[in-house]
Length: 300
Image (cartoon, rainbow, N blue to C red; front, side):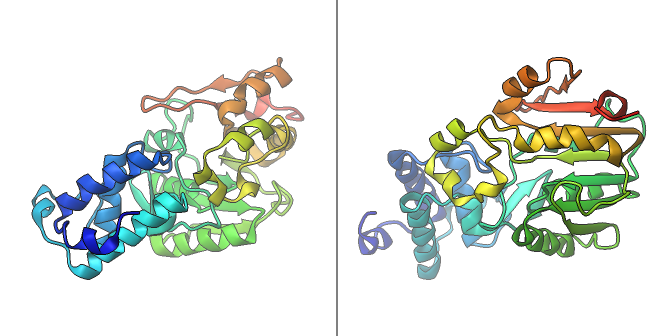
C-alpha cells in the first residue's frame, strides 16, 4: 500500500478516503460478495464503522475531517482488506441480515443468504399460518433463526449447529438481540441432539459447496470456516441426510426450506422423483427449495 505518511498528509475528509479507498480496492481486484457487491458500498461501511455512525450515514458527513487516529484506522482496515483478503464484516465484526445487525467473526459464515427475503415476507405464500416452533439448522451466527424470532414474536426458535465455536457466536447474538426467552442454541450434528422435537418450520443454510467450487473460490472465502461451506464431492452430503431425516422432526403441516446454492443441479439429478419447489427471489438468489412433510421420505 502507498506510503502511509504521504496519505495522511494528503487525504483528510470522509470524501477523500471514500474516493481513494474505492480506487485502491478496485485496483487490487478484491472480491465483493460478503454483504456488499461493489467498492463504494464497501468503503462506506468501512468508514462509517470507523467514525461510529450507522451504515446508511448522512451525506453531510462527507466533508467532515477525520482525526489522525481515525485516518490511521481506515488505512489499517483497508490494508487488511486488500493484502489479507479479509472480508469486511470480519474486520468490522458486524454483518447485516434482514435489516438487523449481527456480530460475526471467523468462527462463522458471513450472512448473505437470500433466505432473508423469505423471512421479511413472512414466508408467504408458503406457510398457511405463523409457525410456533422453528428450527434453524447449521445456524452459524444465528442470524436466520434470530431474524425469524423477530418476524414471528410468538414463536419458539432453536438454533442448532455442530460447531461449538459457531454456537458461541450465536449465543452472543441471542443476548445482543434480547431474545433469550424464546431462542436457544443447541449443539447437534443434524437432528442428533433434538430427540422427539418437532417443528412447524425447519430452515437451513447448510454446507453445500462442492469440491470443484470450493477449490475455485476467491481468497476471501478462505477465511470462512470450511466446515460451514464444504459438503463432499457434489455438495450434497448434508442435504442427503436432511432429506432422509427431516420428516421425523416436522409437525403434520410442517415444511422444510433449504438453501443449496449451485448444488441445486446435482440435487435435482440425484433425486429426480422428489417434488422440490424451487423458490424465486425479487432481489436475486436461487438454489432454495421447499418441501412439505408429506413430500419427504419416511413421512408416513
